[in-house]
Length: 314
Image (cartoon, rainbow, N blue to C red; front, side):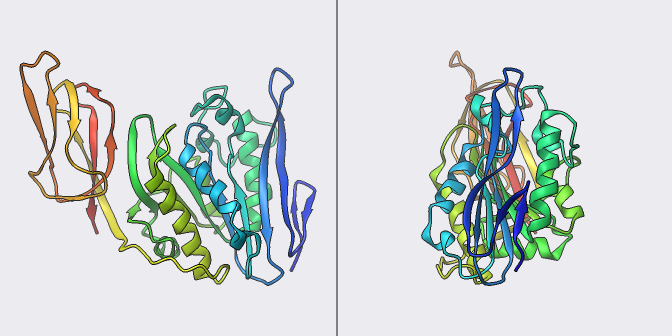
């Protein structure tokens, strides 16, 4: 087995180390570093990447990786390697924001350039030093502001290897999601390194179901490759091929009656929108048979706002 070399830092087989992907300087001369945790067995096996904090306000994924890197099973792998990056976007995490200081979305900066913008340089370092070492990975995200996503893996059904990895992770839902330009997942795929995207909960709010499902999925994935011995039963993973958003039919105060992740039938009452002056109530009904994959928790909505995300089974 060869040494791992990440930006001139060496991690030998059998070693566990915390290293730094790179150091970036802000306009205040403040140094921003991105810590990387590397766990290596002396026995040959696959290399798994676990990454979170691509957006600084997505705290659930950060907590998932924090829990993973403290486990004895991960510190003493049976085989293979784990590279864990709890907070990719350290500067946005510092400010609790989604965007970088220049307003860019880090997950639209890939593959990046060595002398580019702040985000472009982080993307470049990930593609140069981390992606060549891995076999596959999971990138952890949450819903956006006020959007709560039920625990789910997003991958491209067109590629059987993606689906196989998702089934090993075994989340409640597996959703067909095409690649987007400039994303970590798309650029890694060009190097034949499949990256699954895990979505769970909403930004800046711990969702313990989403956190536990994320931790359990990682442990299932590692167990499937013999990296650990811990045995966690699989979920009955539902594959979602199509999706649709139910939108507000009026403006007012939105009250959700259904539970995230549950199956609903077309015509089921999912919630109501009330006129704030007590005059009118509008019913929100399901427009399709499917599973609720995400809910807008914004209490005050305007007509046309996306409220409930419905996933339709394959």
